[in-house]
Length: 124
Length: 510
Image (tube, rainbow over the protein chains, first blue to last red):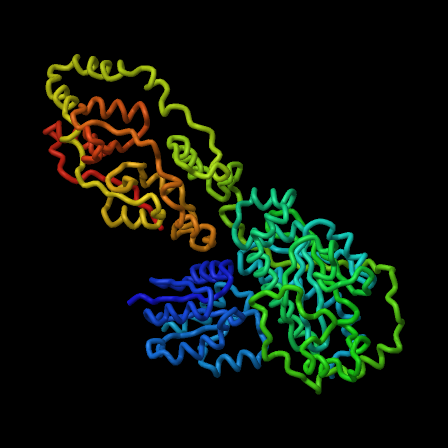
């Protein structure tokens, strides 16, 4: 069965860059969605779960850490893997979002190889 | 042991080198391009020394630092850097980027605000990583704002004052084959020696943690929506350079105006990458990165149609008639063909064939799409119905015609799986083009009673390979493609006994 991906970032440019990097990494998703905020992401998740969420941290309305917490409250997202993608590289922040329920953390700038390294184990 | 302000000051150029080098490597790896930078100058002076490098438009990223550096510092890109980096990450056509470098206005720059901000985020990400690894006492960098415009019209917008004492490092950066541009890191003295500005701060790190506005003007003029405080701003007393204030108080007061030119300019270069395929393509018509053979297809499509494509996107001169010789020869060309055949023993079968009415040749199954549909929609439609032609219109009113070759010409060739490595957001964007922008119109049609000879002549004369058959009420009854014609020719010769479905489409591989 095909995998699905949601990219959550308030920057349309970054969403496209992430999408392109995912493709370059060789990872295959049958369905991809985009959301410009945590609120929009939650609305879409209520309509149906996805396998993987790539999520920015610093966003207006609802930031990435809040989204992780709320997504974990959704029964439909129990199996969803959430990977944060952020320029923030402070270890205490990384530890915090991981304890909040994130499954991985990718720092910007990133490469296709980094995506492969971080996402492939989660997809398997 | 934490670095003192003096240590930081002495190492600023070195750290700046390493940070810009990391940015070049990161950007190069992300976008598979060769990115290099070379330090041109470093030293201490006033803002005036920086000003001369950034006289036109610039992008200035304001970075709030906590830890060893404490306060706001600025990362500058000149007009070239602003348009090249922003255009590069969103894959604007090379010609557009080069035009903007020379003549880009503030409006052009505003259109790239989102991209410029993301470039700033990536840049600060690289800087934060380098300082985290190489600078003791560093806590956190946070990009608080990206200013785009002429920074010296109101320096307060970039949190500088005209005669402010700063340390700075100026670089020449080069991205792929684009012309080099100027960038710089500017560290106000108050960010290096915050104790001088603090009312009571034995430890700058602690002061910053306790104070939400650690440095003068650290609150951005117009903060980006993405800027949010993070947990990284917690105090680290053990790493706080307590000695900074005291040692610094003993230092010379006002900054000297002389600028130390670095005699050992350091080259920071990302490893050269394999050149992407698209770099050779010319973009004389705004069709950047499309190989020559594909470009010729695009030109053919545009020239043969009267699509309402925005003129700035597709300024292709109208193509002359497909085959002038054929056009001039008609109608004698068919007579000549018949004359040639009359040499043979029996021409009745051919005559019957050429007199076959369009209604008996056409394919009745017609696939329609709405003018507002996207290229992606039509590709799916074509694949679903195994057809190479789709009529565009509403309520049975024919507005245009789309062929698979038109689609091929409109979408980026880098959508093909073989080019996946070079696929960029701009390539995907071509799938969102509305069909009304690329469809051929007006559409040449034919009546149901028209003979095959007329169909062939129309196709030869006007170059169309698909003719909708329309009745007297302008209702579409079906379509005739060149494949339908060939099929009738084959069927006319019983000796071939050819049976099968004519191919209708060139696969659109996306």
